[in-house]
Length: 161
Image 1 (tube, rainbow, N blue to C red):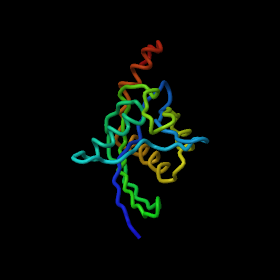
Image 2 (spheres, one colour; image 1 turned 60 degrees about the horizontal axis):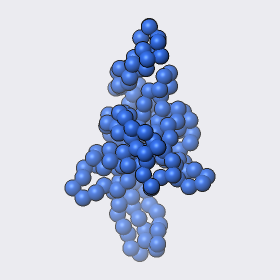
Image 3 (spheres, rainbow, N blue to C red; image 1 turned 90 degrees about the vertical axis):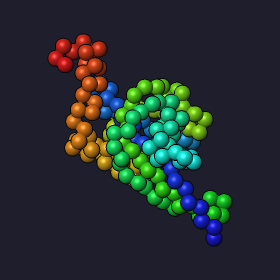
Image 4 (spheres, rainbow, N blue to C red; image 1 turned 135 degrees about the horizontal axis):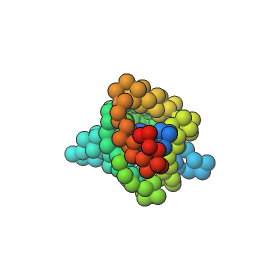
């Protein structure tokens, strides 16, 4: 049997929206299968560059990498070929963009409150990435969204910020 090895990269993109943390997911098919944005690493492209490009293409949004989350490897069969896929995932912070500008490879890109995102994700390994991202924020990223939260509070007229 033929084996094909594939390498992809993607990210868990987070943003602060008022009083809640949100994650950006992509959906395919009907009913929707929700997952994290990811795609193939191109020639002469780093894993980080591929992850940022794929997030931009599949979601219409720009992000920046905060940390490496984890690598996920799995096997699948397609057209009588066994595939081993390794995906390098990064924790990212949303910078700008609109989910309406996603590319043709996905049917929908949408923000979910973080707990709803974990529930909506189809794959257990991706659900685990949400936990890893939250762990990182709790341990290392105390100020990661602080400026954004202050700006949102001020825009909403909260003088305590």
